[in-house]
Each structure stands twice: as C-alpha cells, then as structure tokens.
Length: 365
Length: 100
Image (cartoon, rainbow over all chains, first blue to last red; front, top):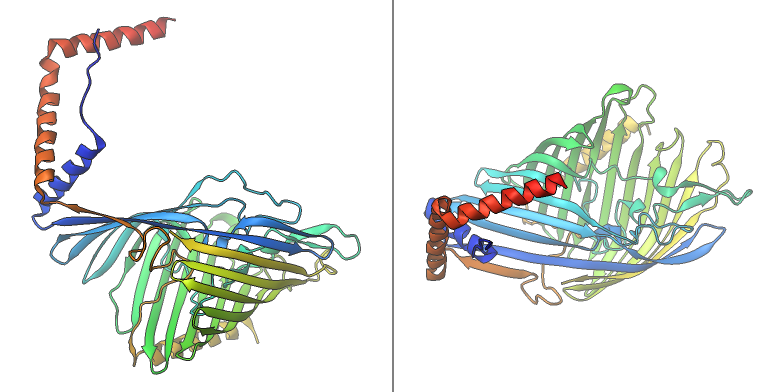
C-alpha cells in the first residue's frame, strides 16, 4: 500500500497568501516583516542585613525578548499589521531572592504581545494580547537610565524579604509592600488610539485580565519645546474583580522633561482605590533627577509606596544608577538602591533595610 | 497632604505639562523599557531582520499557479482509486488499533 504524498510546502503557502493579498486588495505591492530582539543580563547583589549574596539574573526592567512585526497598506490610507512579542526570562530579577537565587531557571516563553492592528488617518484599532490603553502611563521617563532603574522598583529585587533585626527571620518580600500600580499592564483587549490631537493622543481599551473585565483610558503628549523635550501620560484603569473585592481603580500618570544640556527630571504618581469596603487604597510616587552627556547617563531616584500591605505602611527606595551606551545596540549599566519598610504591623516594626546592586548589560540583536 | 489633594496636585502638574507642550514641535516618545529602535548587534543599522515580499513578482505568480494546481489536484483526488485505497487502509489501521 502506497502512502499519498503531497508537495505542499510552507514556502508555497506564503507565496499563495501573498498573491491572494495582492489579488484581493489590488493595492498591496510589498509586505515587510521584521524580526528583532534583545538580551538583558546582570549580576544582582543582595544584602538583607543578615546575609549578602549574588545571583545572575534576567533584568525585568526590560527582559530578554524577541518580536515579529509586519505591516502592509491594504487599501489607500489603510494599513494592517501584526505585533507578536515573547519574552524568555531565566532567573528574573523580580523573582530571585537571597535564599532563592535560581528561581525560574527553567524558563518558558511568555507572551507579551500578540495582536493585529488596522490604522489610518482616523487612528489605530488593535485587538489581541497587548498593552492596555494606560499601560506604561506611570513609567514615562527620558533619563536614559530606565534599563537600570525605573518607576516599577519591584522589578529588581522584588522577591527579597525584609529580615527582622531581632529574630533574624525573613518577613515579607519587597513586592508585597511596593508597586508602581501601572494600570493593569498587558492583557487581551480591544484598543483604540486616536490620531494626534495637537500634541495629545487619546486611547481607550476594554478586555479581560485573569477572568476579570478591565477598562483603561489614557491621554499622552510628547513635544519638543524650546530647549527641552517633554513627555507625559495620564492614565485610568478599572479592574472589575467582583464580589467583596469590588472594582480596583487606578488613576495617575507620569511625566518627564529632558533639557538640551542633558538635565532631566521625572515624576510619577498613581493612586489605587480598592473596591473592598475596608480597602487600603494605596498609592505610589516616584521621582528621578538625572544628567545625560554623550554616551553617559546618570540619575538618582526616590520612591514611596504607601498603604499597600497594611494601612500606614511606607515602603521606600532610594538609589543611583549609571548607564554607558558606547554604540546604539549596547548598554552597560550599574545601579544600587536601598529599600526600607516603615510599618506598625506586628512582625514588621523592626526590619533591616535591603541593599540591591545591579551590574549588567542589554544587547539588542 | 491628603491623598485626594495629592491626586488633584498630580493632575494639575500633568495638565500644565500638556498645555506647556502645545507650543512646540512634535516628538515621538519611545519607552526605553521596550526593545530599543536603532541598530542591532547582528542586524546592523536596520535594527532587525527584514523580509520584504514582493507581492507582484513573477516568482509569486508562478507559485500561485502551482498552488492552484495543488488545489485542483486536491479537489479531484477523491475520484482517484489509489486515494480511495489509501483511505480504506487508514480506516483499517484505525479499526485495528481500536480492537487491540
């Protein structure tokens, strides 16, 4: 008995799709598809006041990832395209701790973006996994040092636990007490971005995250004005968690200015309103001052998250960072920061500060 | 300062920032936490590997004809005795597996 063989190959499929697109639209002449990516690795030192150790980490500020993008004008004034981006985080800097230095060392691919879009003079419509309309609204930053430190402080060292000074026992991890509350991040959604209205772009999205409905909106502006660059975003998100938990609402934003001389200033503030009757309603602010000269950028940061784990808590971090960018595709960086927790909660009144160092490099390929 | 006042102050700062920015020239903000634009280690100045597919090329037209021929063959194959024999063999194989 002979098996029937076909000569249908993937190459043939691509060609067929291309010709069908060309035939049906009557407009498309060429389709551009692009693959790009980066690796971001560092040595992270950790000192919880009781033990000092180090780990090799993938830096979650801008993790190791790659993406496929492509777009094509399918009709006069109408472009269709895709963004598919996935990350591959081996021992992520947000999950490694003093006693867990190999956390996540069997990594898997993790979806970041998988969405299609249509855009024209009327704006842009996207559907699929991707940024909610306000994702990134707390992270606008022109300092040139975000690869080393940015508003989401728990992305580096977030799993390190504060240690009680007396008992020398670990208590809560930094990420239980600290957050930038960045507007529900990425999720499956439908999103509309307006065209630029003066300097402002508006965006709205609706979708689901962890089986909860989420709605987001933002207003962004970025402009060059005399002697400086200015960028800022206002954001809003509502995550309907249902039941006693209620709807979690986040409002706030961030802005950053960079002078032609290289001086820069960044401010972020987000307030979360919990739907629960006795919710903590936490908030976070983050500030950064910096200076960029040639291939070098330095900055200093301070941030404070209030009321996240317990009402009255204050989880602060201050630090300094340096980034050297010798060529367009490589950055070398060093950062150090100190996390402190001021709490009146039982077991958390007398904890050591945590000192985190980061020495790494991001390479785009 | 109460949290309500903090929020109000924040919105005031942002609104001022937006209004200030109205007078300047356009700038595209790019988050530095994303894969940066610009050159790549292997990909050079382009910053990525780009595959341009010429949708009107002769190669694609030929491939499309090949694709159409394949479709025609697929549509006709059900009448082919050899293909019928192949389907019967598949059915027999499935039954044999089921009866094991």
